Amino acid sequence: MEKRKGFRNVLALGIVSFFTDISTEMILGVLPVFIIEELGASRAILGLIDGVADVLNYFFRIVSGLISDKLGVRKIVVFAGYAISTFAKPGFALVRSWPQALAIRVTDRVGKGVRTSARDALLAESVNEESLGKAFGIHRTLDQMGAILGPGLAAILLGLIGMRGIFVSSFIPGFLALIVLAFFVEERRVPRRRREGLMKDVNAVLTRDFLYFLVAVALFSIGAYSPSFVLVRSKDLGIPSAAIPLIYAIINVMHTLIAIPAGLLSDRIGGVRTLSMGYLLFSATSLTLTLLSGVKVAVLAALLFGSYVGIIETVQRAIVAKFGPSQLKGTAYGLYYIVVGFCSIIANVVFGTIWDVLGSEKAFIYSTVTGLIGFIAMLSLTRRSDY
Image 1 (cartoon, rainbow, N blue to C red):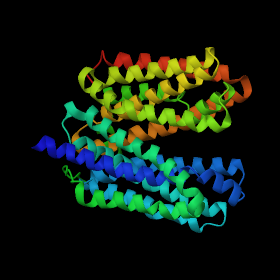
Image 2: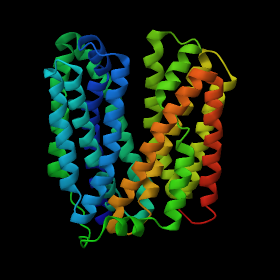
Image 3: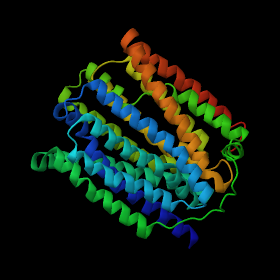
Image 4: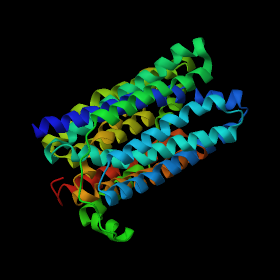
């Protein structure tokens, strides 16, 4: 009975993410064009808006984790984060300048940062350790289904209600997510933390194995470029501009299809071994984009890249739940997301700079090497522990 209740919580949190991703991806599918064409901002300003929003997103993930650990509750923190985003996004319909758009975008991403670590901790506490991979796989699959449906819905609505109408409409799935969260997600209380210093909590979480895991993740992540570069390379390989969204769709579909199998495999053979396969798959993707050419190669790379993302987005989060005491899972997730977020910014700047200065081949070779280094570092963790 307890196991069934736990997976009902997992399913409910997955549905919350499903509706929220519909809401978010409806907006993200049209927001760049809106900011540049309707608000008159430059592409540099667009990059600034995304960069500032992402930095605050990752900063608030550690704040969220620490707060939920201190309070001994998760759901109220998760609800606050989802509520901030849900009520912020329709505000895009009212903006008349890019600074106003920046304010809305930052508020939305702060909401994401507030909810993420506490949500992942709640998800992990809903099931036993042997089912973590399956739980995060289910959640990731539902999340990505929303990410696939959102842009399609925006495409249908764009000709009917325009961009500002889409921004207003995004409130509907966001509000449905809040209803599911309020009435169907159960709190998993943990012992309330005493008033101890921040560093004491961090030191309690940063065991030798967890520190080694974070270092391995960082070594891999400093070369882990975003899907945008796969799309740009696909165009170079001969994919027409009109068909580039199909390459992005392939990535998202593979991401969705692989999440649950990856989670189940991690429960069976171990998360670290499964994650190592994902790192190796990333290097294979980069090597493919370095050595081969042609339209079919672009499709193959999208399939490989989507599979890699489905593995790491599921399994890395499941592994984090195994480190540290249960009452400090929020702090563990906060530390993890800070490492991933910081390295992601470095990776995309370095990768893009190498591409601009030395060409795409050297950029993908750089990521192939960092992927292999991460693979070796992560695989060596299997000799130190049974994670």
